[in-house]
Image 1 (cartoon, rainbow, N blue to C red):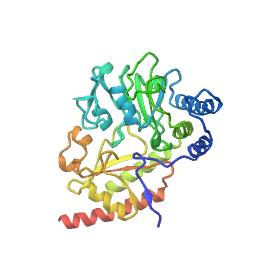
Image 2 (cartoon, helix red, strand yellow):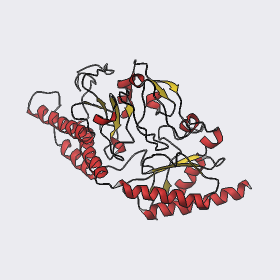
Image 3 (cartoon, rainbow, N blue to C red):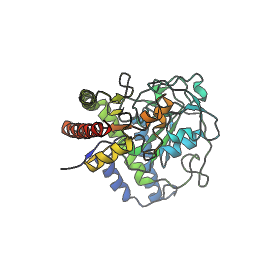
Length: 347
């Protein structure tokens, strides 16, 4: 029986539109910084993708700076700024911002000083969606874009970061979106590419894929395709809750991504569940892909006030548009079978 992939918040399949754009870009010879015809052709590929990303993210009139990842984009936006954040933020944000803000049991954070605060639009583990205050300094929209309606122009943020492989582009390309008039200091200095903000020859092929994927991802959201995924998520949570009376589903009653469910059986280690599901043919995670594998438990759940046993016993299921009801049912029945074995051993 084929494997079932349920870790879309970690990475997504390459979209056909992105693959086609990348194959086309492979035929372009020039360096985009060269002034001859071949160079201009390569530059045109980048500028087409820049317009595509700007239009898809509702960022027309803002600057799009292509980077190698959302992590690099966060560093470019945050280094030396002294911004504040909460511990529920991704590590690429907490590496540069002070964890001075607190999150409640649902993971919500109050930003009393938006101009000096980095606040994620969506949490990658819980899927909780924030309403951003006007003028927020930076918003991590890596999980938001391509799954829920989003436009930089109405988000209230001055800066935002996105990651291509979270919405069907290749790995290794991201972007920083900044409002006109907001300046950043280049971390990579050299040839002055990307409007002098990020030197280094651009990843023309990856950027082409990102532009095409952004257009397709925004179209899917506009077409309401994620509604079916939300129904699968709700069915899964109800089915698991009926079978496991001690299951704790985090942030179940607040606004979340349509594809994400995050739950815990206190004492049944998340990493153990991930390995058991993997052997049974299901790809799930114990939290953010960047921190999965660390045995200390979810820092997000700890920041939300949960104890170590609860935080280290959580697993995340994140679905995609390709996920079928059969996939979810197969996972649910397999997980319940392992849950019952665990309870028998623990009795």
